[in-house]
Image (cartoon, rainbow, N blue to C red; front, side):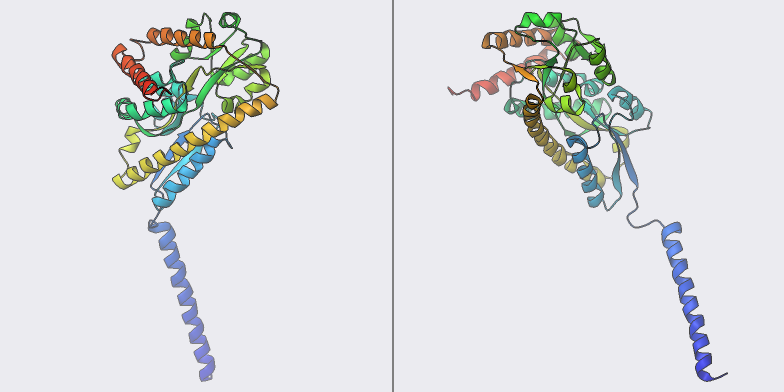
Amino acid sequence: MSFSRGANILHGVDVKKSILFVVIDLFLCFFLLPPAFSQEYTIKFATVAPEGSTWMNVMKEYDAAVRKESGGRLGFRLYPGAVQGDEKAVLRKIRAGQLHSGGFTGVGMGEIAPKVRVLDSPFLLRDYAEVDYVYEQFDGEFRQAFEEGGYVLLGWAEVGFVYVYTQKMITQPDDLKGLKMWTWEGDPIAEAAFRALGINPTPLPLTEVNTSLQTGLINAVYTSPLAAIALQWFTKVKYIIDVPLADAAGAVLVSKRFYDQLPKDLQEILLRNGRMYMAKLTQLSRKDNRESIEELKKRGITLVKVSEKDVEHYIEVGRRARRMLVGGLFTEEFLNRVEKTVRDFRRSHSPTQ
C-alpha cells in the first residue's frame, strides 16, 4: 500500500468520525437538551371574532410581538370564529383549564365583574371623548374588579357604538314597541334597555341570530356597524336607527391563575404589549365602524334620522334603564359616580365653557 493511499484511507476515517460527531451533537441539541428559546408557555385564546377580522389581525400582531420579545418563550394559540363556543362557553373552558384567555364583549365581562357593565349602559355615553374619559377615570377600579373575579385585564378593546337595525321602518319611539327585538341571551343590560323602551325582547344565543332573522322569529337586532357586516346581519335588515344605543365595551382577559404562573419578565411583556395592541385595535375599530356605516348605506340600508325631541326621550329611557340595574350589576353609589363623571366632563367641554 502506498503512503498516499494509506493517508487517503485515514482521512476518510476521520471524515466519517467527524460526521458521526456532528450527528450526535445535533441529536443532543434537538432531542435531549432544551433549546435556548423553546416556547415554555402557550396562552390558549378564543373569541367569537371571525378569522380575517380587524380583531384577529391585531391579535396576530400582538402574538408576534410577544413571541419576539420573549425569545419564543411565550405565545398565543388563537381560536377565532366561535370555534370554542360563545363567550359563556369560553369562560367555562377557562375555568376548566382548557383555555386561558379570551376576547370578550360586555356579556362575557359581566360574568366576571358585573360593575364593568356600566360601560354598556344605554344612552350614557354620546361620543368617543366621553368614552375615553370614563375608561381613564375608572380603569384601576375595573382592573381590580376583574382580578377579584379571577382575571387579569390585558387591554380594553371596545366593540364601539351599537345601533338598532330593523326590518321595518321606525319613525318614532312608540313604533319600537311592535318590534320582535333580539337580545343576547343572559344580557341584563340589553333586557333592561329594551324593557324601558316598552319592548318585550326575545333572548337568543349569538349563533342563532342569522337564522332567526331569516325565519321571522325576530325582526330587529343591535350591534356595531362593523359587526353587522362581519356577522352578515345587514343582509336581513333594511333600516338603522341613527342614534347610538350604547358604546359596547370589549376587552382581552387572561386567567389570573395562568398569569400568576408566568415569570415576572413575561408578565411585563404580556401586559405592556396588550395595552399597546388593544389601544391600536380600538382606534382601528372606530375607523372601521365609521367606514362600515357608509358601506351599509351603499348596500341599501336606510339611516332613519331621529328628532331632537326623540333623542331626549331616549336619554330619559336610558336613565330609567340604568336605575333598573342598581343592586344587580352595580351599586347606586357607583352608578352615581359614573354619571357625575360624565356630567362633569360635558360641562367642562361644552362650547360655552
